[in-house]
Image 1 (spheres, rainbow, N blue to C red):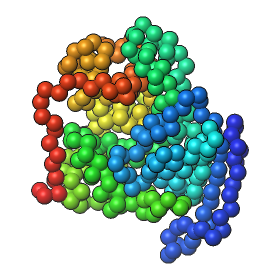
Image 2 (cartoon, helix red, strand yellow):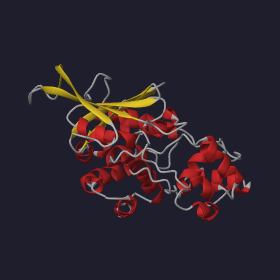
Image 3 (cartoon, one colour):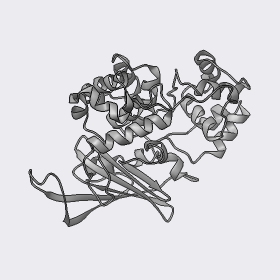
Image 4 (spheres, rainbow, N blue to C red):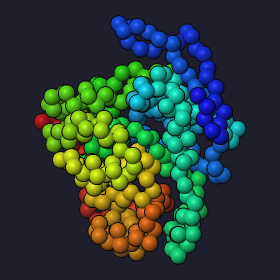
Length: 328
């Protein structure tokens, strides 16, 4: 396999084995690729959105080392990204190592095209300044649908900590050991999630509504994985009961690295945008879209920059409570 613009080498590791012992072991395949990030590239802030905060059983980020286990179209694989002397070294393990190696730069956000963004932002001093300050933060793109959909559906209308706790429990319950030395778990197989009775998810803290939405998405995962672009994936997602514009935007942002995806229906983002761009402490989805229109093509990027800059709107009410459906 040859990848343009990067050095790639296959590494033999005959002592390492992956697979199901009952089905037979096979040698662990490993590929290494060296990538050159852009000037001022911010490693942690670029790859961090691919992980669930605090602890993710399928990945980790510690300093200059990033690990992520995935189910690729060519089989399970694990990606390791490391900062080495200004470059990024991508090492991939497992049957899907070639697929991951070819897309390692996208996972790192290196395919994110920011050309012309500062010119577009120039009329707005705040956004222009944020664009310069966080110029090294790039938006990653995985090309993998279900791992992003799992995280996003679990976050529907609940507090983040509640969703992240459920995600960790689900991955630990359904996950399988991932290839490579990092001792990670693969994200759940969508076919297994779709075939599991919904009440199995109650101890994980997920009620029937989100579970059934997740299972509908899992049933359609193979078809949704084939979506060629943001528009088509969004269209297909919105035909699934329980999936709305917020869920679709959150998914396509990670699958395709779409810088224009705006999370309409979010509890906080309209307020953040209205506060940051107009000094208004509260905003509707309509007001948010009105304020973001001059940045079309990069509207989602502006939302990310406002969050990175700490432009949270003033809080006037209580935080969303943490619940536990495990007790229901």
